Amino acid sequence: MSAVIVNSQLIRVARFYESTIGKKAIMAVTGLILFGFLIAHMLGNLQIFLGPAVMNHYAETLHGNPPLLWSVRTILLVSVALHIWASVSLWSLKKEARPVAYVKKANVSSTWASRTMMLSGPMVAAFVVFHLLHLTTGTIDPQHFVPLHAYENLVNGFLVIPFALVYIVIMILIGFHLSHGIWSMFQSIGFSHPRYTPMIKTFAAVFAWILIAGFISVPVAVLSGLVR
Image (cartoon, rainbow, N blue to C red; front, side, top):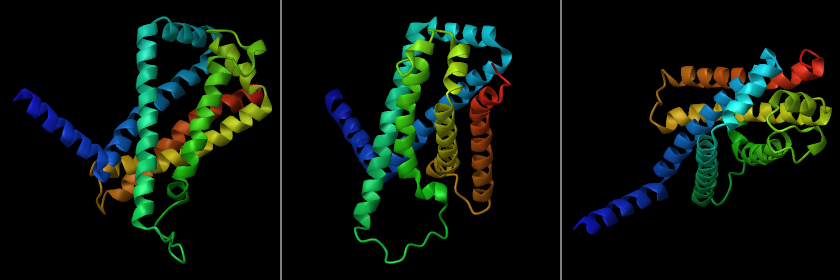
C-alpha cells in the first residue's frame, strides 16, 4: 500500500515538473536562491572598502568550514542547472506553441530586458565560469593569485583593464536580467494585479540596479585608485 502511495506521489511530482506552472515555479525558486547569493556576494565584495585585513579574514572564514562551503556551492550549482533547464524548457514550449513567427513582431508591452533573457542568461553563465577561474581558483592569472588573499586578488584582477571592463559590462547585463527576473518571480507565484504590478516592476528595477551598482563600485574603485 505504501509503495502505491509513493508511486502516486512521484507521478504527481513528475507531472508538476512537466507542466508549464511547474517549470515557472522552478524558475522562481531557483531564481530566488541565486538572487540571495548575489546579495550575499555583493556584501562580501564591498568589504574591500574596509581594507585587506577585514576582507581576507572574510575569505578565511568562508574557507574555514569546508562542509558548509561545499554545501552552499552544491545548492548553487543545482539551482543554476535547474534554472537553465526550466528556462530552456519554457522557451521550447513557447516556440512549439507558435512554430511560425509573426510577420511583424509587436514589442509594445515587452522590454529589452525581457526580450534578451535567453541571450543574457548564457552570457552570464559563461562569465560565472570565467569569474571563478579568474578570482576563485586563480587559473586565469596564477602569477598574481594568492589563495585566501581576496583583497589582493580583487585589486590585481581589476587592475587589468580588459577584465574590469568585461566585468562591468556583464554586471550591466545581469542588471537587466535581474530587473525582469525579479518581477517574473513575483508573477510566477501569483503576485500579478493591475494595481500592484507597476510597483513590483519598479521595486524589481530599483533593487536590481542598486545591487549591480554595488558590484560595479569595486572595479571602478580599483581603476580610479580609490582602492589599492
